[in-house]
Amino acid sequence: MSTAAAAAAPLAGLRVLDFTQFLSGPFGTMILGDLGADVVKVEPPQGELARTIPPHFAGADSLYYLGVNRNKRSVVAELKNPEDVARVRRLALAADVIVENFRPGVMDRLGLGYAALSAAKPALVWCSISGFGQEGPWRDWPAYDMVVQALSGGMSLTGEPEGRPVRAGVPLADLSAGLYGVIGILAALAEARASGKGRWVDIAMLDCQLAMLSYQAAYYLHAGQVPGPQGSAHDSIPTYRAFVAGDGASIIVTANTDAMWQQMARVLAREDLLADARYASNAERFRHRHALWTELDAAFLQRHAADWAARLMAASVPAAVVTPVDGALQSAHAQARGMVQTLHSDSGDALRVAASAIRFHGETSPAGRHPPPLGRDTDEVLREWLGA
Image 1: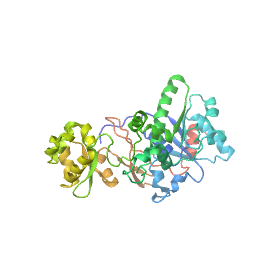
Image 2: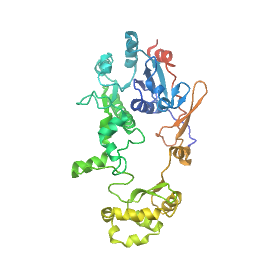
Image 3: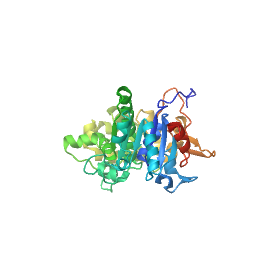
Image 4: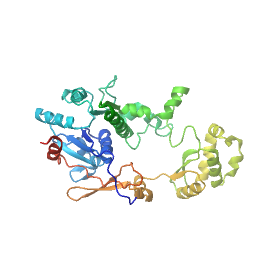
C-alpha cells in the first residue's frame, strides 16, 4: 500500500438515500459510499431481509448483508405509516440521489415516486434497479440473479459442452446492475450540476447481462450462429484455454498471438508442433483445434501446474493456476493492493471483507466504516439532514 496521505473523497458531501435491499442495489450504493458519499440506508423496523440470510453471521447480521453495506448509515422507517412516509419524503428532498430496487410502481404507490419528487426538486438524480426495467412486457416479473442469468443467454454459455447450464459462481446479474447503476448515477450527476436538471436512471438486470454478451452478441447478430457452452476454452482462440497438469490442478494459458503460441510450444518441449502446417496460424489452429488440444493435454500432464505457470510466464506467455477463493484473497498481490479490508464495529469487533476495487494513484484508501446496525443512525440523520 502507498504511504501517501489520503485525500478528500471525490463524492464527499453527496447525499444518497438508499432504499435498496439484498445485492444489486446495496452493491452499487456501497461503491458510492466507498467514494465518500453520505449513504443513508432506509430499512423497515425488522431490517432488510438480507440481514438474516444464512449460513454465516457476525453478531446479529449475516455476512451476506455485511459484505455489501459498509460506509452507510441506517435509518428505520415504516413505509406503511403515513408519518414515516412524510419524514422519508423530507429526507428524499434533502438528498442528491435516490436509489431503489423495488418492483416498478412500488415507490409511486407510496407517494415517493420520481415524478412527484423531481417536481419538487428538479435536480434530483433517481436510480431504479429492477429485473426487467420500468417498461416492457416483463416489467412486473419477479427477478433474482439466476433467473436473469438464465434469460440473458449468459447461462447458456457457461459450463462444459454437452453438460448442464451452469450459473456463474459470482452473481453477475446483481453485481453488474449495481455497477451500471453507479455509472448512470455519476453521468446524471455531472449533467445535473451543469443544467440543474436530474434524470431517472432505469437499470434492468437483464439489460446489463445482454449488454455484457459483448462479442458473443456480435457473433450471433452478424453471423447468425448461436454460441453454446464455452467450458474453459475460447471460441475464437484455441490456445486460450484451461489444461489439467500432472498434479491434477488446472492451469489456464492465454497464448493469443503467434509469438505466444510459439513460445508455449517451446516451453512444452513440443517444437515439432511449430513445423506442423495444421498449426501454422491461428485460423489453422482453430480449424484443427481438437487435434491440437489432444497434443497439448498430453504435454501439460508432464509437470505440476505451478511449475508450468512459472515457465510460461518467464517466456512471456500469460498463464495462471486456477486459484480457490482463499488463495486469491491471501495472495501477496491482493495483500499488497489492500484488497482485504478490516472494518471495526461500534463495539470493536473486527470484520474482514473484500475491499473496493477503485484506487486513486498516490493516495491511500480510507479506512472504511463497518456496516451499520439496524436503525443506529436514525436520530443523527434526521438532525443533520432535516434539522429535526
